[in-house]
Length: 265
Length: 218
Image: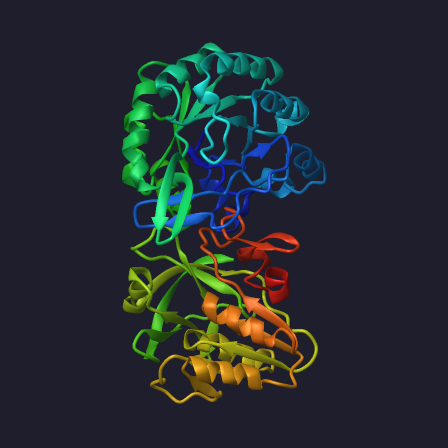
C-alpha cells in the first residue's frame, strides 16, 4: 500500500474526510463499521475530550447492511471509490450476524481492497475475543465465505492479542489492525461517560501489541492507536507495522495525513 | 469545506471573559455556520459560530477553560469549515436573542436575515452596540416576556439560557435554537454530536446547529 496510511474506521465516517484530505495521500479509507441490523447508536453525550485522550460512545451507529448495499447500488459511494481504495468494516451482535453480513456482502467484495472485521468495539456488549474457540470457528467460516483480503481488527481485552493473532493467521486471514479503542470511563461532575478511549494514551499499548504480533506472525499489520505525528508513525514501523491507521488525530488536524505521507514520497 | 489558518485582525474585550476576534482572511459562509478551531489543550477542535465585525470575518469567544483561553491568546489559528447547515429564516419578522459571545453572529444575521437582535448579558459591555442590551437574569426574563409581534425567534447562547428563552417564547412564535453538543469532526463523519429529537437523532454538525426548539423540547 502506498502510502501505507489508512483512515481508521469510525473516525473517517463514510468518506467525509475527503473534503479535507487529498486522496493521493491516503493508502486506503476504512468505512464506518456496518452491522447486520441497523443500529441507532448510543444516546448523547457520546464524546468527551482532553489533551491526552478522547472517549467516544458512538455505539456503532449505522444503517445496517441491507441499506448499505442499497446505497452501494445507488452509487452513493461511487465518487469515494473513484478517489481512494476502500476497506469495508463490519461487525455483528453475535457470531451468526458476522456471517450474515459476510454472506450479504460477498457479491460486492471485488469493489473493496479489503474487508476489516471489527471484533473489538468497546461500545457493544458482545466481545468475540473473549470466546477463543467460537472466534476460531467464525474466522474459518468467514474465510470460506470471502475471497477478499481479510483483516481482523483486534483489541486488547479478551485473550492476549498475540494469541488471537496466531489464530487469525492459522485461519488463513491476511492481516490485523492493532488496536481498537479500549473500554474507559470519564467522570465529569455528575455525568459519567462510558466508551472507548483513543488518542496519545493508547500509543504505548498499541506499540506493544504490534511488537508482540510481529514477533509471532507474518500477518500484514495495520497499526492503530495514538498516532498523532510523524515520529509516532516511525515508531510503529520500527516495531513491525506494515501500515498505520490514522483515527483520532484527524480530529485535531486533518493535515496530519499529508504530513505523514511526506515520509513516503 | 477546507483547512485554513486565520490571522487575528482585532481582539475586542466585551466583558471580563468574553471577546470578539476578527480575522484578516475571509471565508464565505451561511448564517449560523461554524468553524472547528484547533487548540493545544484538547485532542479535538472546538466549534465557533461565524459572524462579522466591522465587515471582517469574526467569532465570539467566552473563556470557559484552557481551550478557549488558548484561542484568545493566539494570533494565528488553524481551523476547518465552514461547517453545519446555514440557517434559512422563515417568512415574516424575526428576532435573534443571544449572549455577548454571539455578537459577531448577531451582526451577520441582522444584516443578512434582516432580523432584530436582542442581547442578554450578565454584566455591562465595554463597547456600545447597535442592539438593545439587557443586563442580569431578571431583566433578561422581562425582555423575553415583552417580545411581541414576531413570526420567529432564533436563540443562541448557553444551554440554560436557550431553554429559559424557549419556554417563554414558544407560545408567541416559532422558536429556533442553536444547540450545543460536544463535537469532534464537525463534518458528519464521527456521529458524535447527536441530539435526541422527536424526529429521531439529529447530528448537529450536519443537521444543525439550528433546530426547531419544539423538535427537542416538545
